[in-house]
Amino acid sequence: MKYLILVGDGMGDLPVAELNHRTPLEVADTPFLDTLCRQGELFLTHTIPEGFPPGSDVANLSLLGYKPEEYYTGRAPLEAAAMGLTLAPEQTAFRCNLVTLSHEADNQVRMIDYSAGHISSEESHQLIAALDEECATDIFRLHPGVSYRHILLVQGESPQMDTVPPHDFTEKDVTAPWNRYRQDSRWAALMDKAQAVLAHHPVNGARVAAGKNPANSIWLWGEGKLPKMPSLAERFGISGSLISAVDLLKGLGVNAGLSIINVPGATGYLDTNYAGKAQAALDALRHQDFVFVHVEAPDETGHQGLLKEKIQAIEDFDQKIVGPILQGLQASGEDFRLIATMDHYTPLCLRTHTASPVPTILYDSRNTDHGSGLPFNERTAEAENKRLHASMANGELLMEKLLERRKQGLPS
Ligand SMILES: [Zn+2]
Image (cartoon, rainbow, N blue to C red; front, side, top):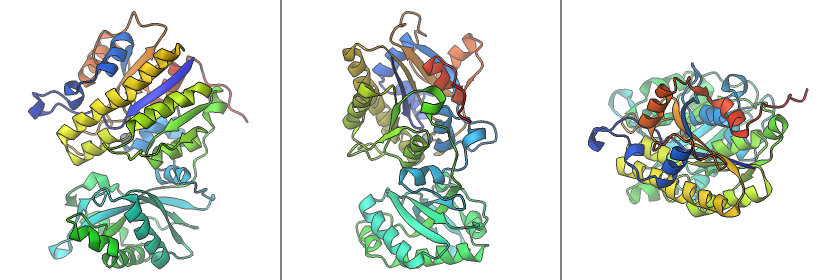
């Protein structure tokens, strides 16, 4: 028996007026998800416990079978793990975005772009190297990640500040958090120095000349210390792999004891190497029990508020990930159980995540005759939940449901 979880990040959405009040998932052509849904169970899953921010970190931790209340320490330590950084107990990791800020009249600050135009890693690594050279101290060190996503490691007692994710503030006023960050003189000095270095860097000169958003500031958030998670092998006795373009997901995988498969050309966007990811999943299942495949593009297009692109990202997930994996498994003749879902909604009208329970398919290749009979979308999942009078499953229980077993006693 093989086990899979396929995640279209941020696929869920609210009805869109332009689509006759249907959602992108309802409108998208998703023959493979719809087949799995018709022949499988359809239900709603709570991935975000009450009181938690609806981040991909918390949501995917849930989907991997870990109760966020017990295991979540912050987003940045997970990304640091993906980058091969081992946090010492006294260190704190911060996510360090390269962003485009605009300093306007009356000391107002605006977040133009949380991703500095999805800056390439080739460009951003030059900027991070310059920043680390100029700004590093005994306390602060910078480490390059992918595109606009980097890590700041803080040694010893971290300056306290109330951080916010920059993607929640796209094209919005960030004067209040900006000023809050600057209350501690160490942070203020770091942020000022970083802006000075970035302002004069030739990479930004070239970006401005090409009409692209410059990476003119750093933005710190998602801080936390090293989490202590028992592996999925310890908990369930399974081996597995995780496939994602995104460091956060790879970090979750590292902490869950999964093998991380780095697929060449996986970008976390519409131009990702879908075929490579699908093939890598099938290859992993030849020698392992479980694979977790994560596709980022529906979330990114949701944050950008791009309707056509979000529909495209959902169709790509269906036809280039779910389809080939399904066909490969069927050709192998092996029995499998598969969950297809999303981690959270990223509604186009909000351009950020919400904590709504997510539509989830559980498909078992041995039992396809008594499925929901419904296509896969938000509306059918809600209707099915109501029809079955089902309470919403908690995300961390999905793994037990998928594996048809209770977790084994944890090693003491
Ligand atoms: Zn997400």
